[in-house]
Image (cartoon, rainbow, N blue to C red; front, top):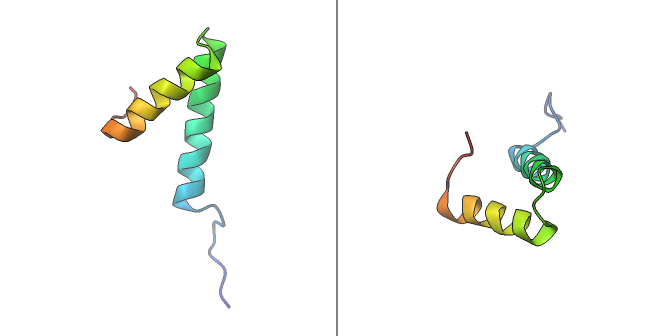
Length: 50
């Protein structure tokens, strides 16, 4: 069976990006719950952080 050149899937890349965003919010002073709520709003509303 052929393996993809890059084993990281699009979904895995998105998960990594969300985790980095979460860590950034926590580092900036948000509580864990606040960081998750902001990320949830971004995901639900389909918004991209700039």
